[in-house]
Structures are given as structure tokens and as C-alpha cells.
Image (cartoon, rainbow, N blue to C red):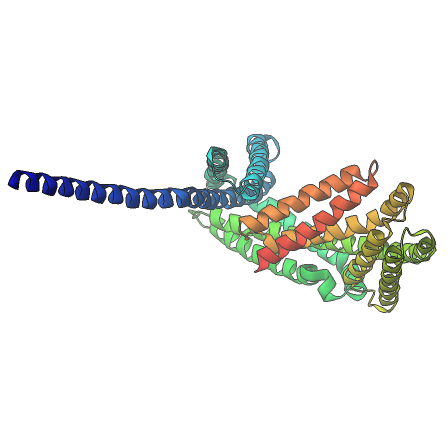
Length: 416
């Protein structure tokens, strides 16, 4: 009897032990599966973060190298900077590949080996850009420290300052006319460019004066830093004036596009009202009528708006015509669509160019990966629009509109 009771007790103990082990295995399995389930998402987020940091580093390295190449070109000429230019061209190719891979990494939500490979390649390309451009920059910095050419460099910088001051004087009347033709808001940074350029030239003059004093000493001290400072100031003044001229040219394009678009809008709203008679249904006809009302309001605003700030007016009129185009899609033939696209394309391209320029100015020297990626998308869509303009105006118009959207997004991301 005792033997039988012991046997029963042993069996119960074994069953209980097995149950505890099974329960532990089940709990451990659940925890392990849960951890493994979240691990790929964390890994993907880490990959995206790592790739974004690498993208920004590479983009900053190219911007810095581009400025350094400008200084080196002015100082040493085309022949001595050919290798630097080749390295920068290769870096630009790598940069385009980085942005392409970053877009794929951002748009594909599924973690996996392909995402890991994309992130690794972005990091590799960024490292290659930094290494190649850093080597070139170091080489030219070492050359600049050679004081033997300080007097010649001083002379060249003095000549550049004289040329830029002459340009300021020659353009003074034009700058005054531009300030009367366009508001400060329309001109943006270009409104203060002449004054800022003059201040940069004063800075360069002061630096060259210190260099001249140093070179007059019996044992001249190092002057490379002062010469670099003057070089940067002169280059900044030149860039300010170049950017201002480009801004005014874009505003002229916008003003001309607005005049043409307003005339085209009057024709289109009349044609649109006629199209209500052939609309396939009452809802389509009503949509066309509402769109015509919005176009009429935009035309009235264009007539009453301040001509010195044409971009907002052009934007609204273009938006009203785009809405009208959508409402006419069901009633318009393909030939009519092509005709409208050709007429609207110039205005859309002008808007896209100025929006892109504003986004580039806002993001110059700053902006995270998202802003730079949107800016790259805008550049790509604008290039597509310009390429397709003569062969497929409908596709070109769509690309121009996408460029405007991407440029606005880049501007907002860079500023905020």
C-alpha cells in the first residue's frame, strides 16, 4: 500500500514539474516572439536615422567644397583646380545616388535586407564624398598657407574689389528702379543685397589693409588667414549681386507670365461656359460653372492687385485655372487639353523656378534630410518639366506643379 501511494505521489510530482516547464517555455516563447516582432521596426528606424545623418553630412561637404573650389579657382586658375573639380563632379554623382536611395528607404515601409543594403550604401557614399573632398580641401589649404604668393594674391583681390565696386556703382540706378518696381517682400533677400555687398567689400578692404601693413614689415607675419577672409568677403559680395540679378529676372518672368495668364484666363472662362452645353451630366456642368466663378474672382484680383508683388496673384490665378482644368476634364477633348497645357506651362514653370530659388535660399547651409530630399525632388521635377515642355506639355505641366509643391514643402521644412 505504501509502495502504491509513493508511486502515485511520484507521478503527480512529475506531472506538476512538466507542467511548470511547459508553462515557462510558453511564456518565454511569447516574450521572445514579441521582442522579435518589434526588432525589425526598430532596426529600420535606426537605418533611416543613420542614412539621414549621412545624407546631411554629404550634402554639407559638397556645399563647403563648392565654395572652396570657387576660392581655389580664383586663386590658382582652371588648370591647377582640374582635379578638385573632377572630385566635386564625382561627389555630385554620388549625391544624386544618395538622394535616390534615401527616397527608396523612406518610401518603402517594410524592413528587410534591401533596406539595410540601401542604408549601408548611403553611409558608404557619404564617407567617400567626405574623404575625397576633404583631401582636396586640405591640399588647397596647404597651398594657401604658402606666403610666397601673398603679394600677388593681394593684388588680385584688390582688382576684384575694384571691379565689384564698379559693378555696384553701374547698377545703382537699376537697383533703384527694381526697388520701385517690386516690393521688399517680392524681392526677399535681394532687397538688401546691394547694401550687404557693399559691407562685404568694406570688410575685404579692411582685411587687405592689414595684409599690406603686414607685408611692409621687415619680417612679414603669416597673412593667409587675412587673405582668406578678404577672399570670402569678395566672393560673398559677388554672390549677393548675382543672386539679386537672378531674383529680379525671375520676377520679370513672373510679371510677364501673369499678364499672359490673365489674358488666357479670360478666353478659357468663356470657352468653359460654352463647354457646359456639352457636359456629360448636370454635376459636371455645375462644377464647371463654379470653377468659372473662381476664375473670374482671380482675374478681378489680378487687375486690382499690387503689380509690384506678382507671385501671390499668379499663384492664385494659376490655382483657379488648374481647378477649372479639372472640372473640364470630362468635357474637353485631348486636343483642347494639350492647347491649355501649352498656354499654362510658362506660368507654371516661372512659378516653379522662383519657388525653388526661395527654397534653396532658405535651406542654404541648413536644413535636415527631409528638407533637402524635398528640394532634390523639386529640382528633378522642374528638370523633367523643362525637358518635356516641347514634346509633352501635359506631362510637363504636371511635373511643374509637382515641383512647386516639393519646393514649398522644402521651404517650410528648412525654415521650421
